[in-house]
Image (cartoon, rainbow, N blue to C red):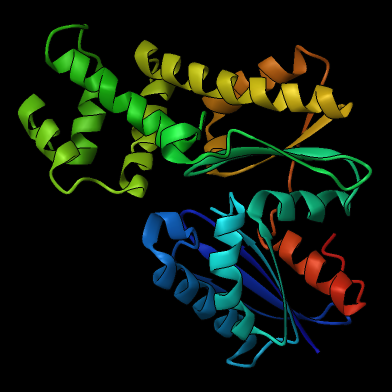
Length: 297
């Protein structure tokens, strides 16, 4: 029996295949799995590529997918028929809830993801689901890499047109975009325009500047981290849990993590990182459905 777990995120898709006894078969890696960012055909194609690579081309018996972008019933109705052919039995869930399920086994908890996008999800002991901030780049994504990149662009524009004093943040943003002045930056921003991933990638320039003491960059990271931490604390209090799981590339920023941790811990809540195995949630869901007991600890 082949059990596969998938994490289909905004930047990449990774799959892991195991036997029912917990023996690892292989892993597969592909591009983004959020269809809002790359389109439905490409997203499903990336999931298929990762799954087939993890199994060596064999069809899994049970497949658990945690997928970014499944925000509404319409999203599930669109995606579910397209993934059901990828395995004999398929369980698909919003990536945040899949990750949280993988950590708590379905018990009460709160998880915050800060990657290309952001989300805060929670479960209570009755299995009820709660979600905050997960409304895409236009309506949500507070504290995400996209949010940080967008704020960096706005700060840089203000520096280049004279509204603010110029700092190294502007230099690093221009370097990242390949622009030389405000007109070239405007052209970069509106001709195309840049993808969500491209804007999110500017968060690296912000982190670089912050680590060199740039006050504007530090301010962006403080604002971003505090905004997302506020949502996480709000949900943790509602569900009466004293621990928040965190996941996502943005948390690799020591400056961002310091602000996030300071906000959360000042309110009596501890922080715990999720498993380094990104597809753990999907794998645990699939293994439980199969009647197996796979543990990655």
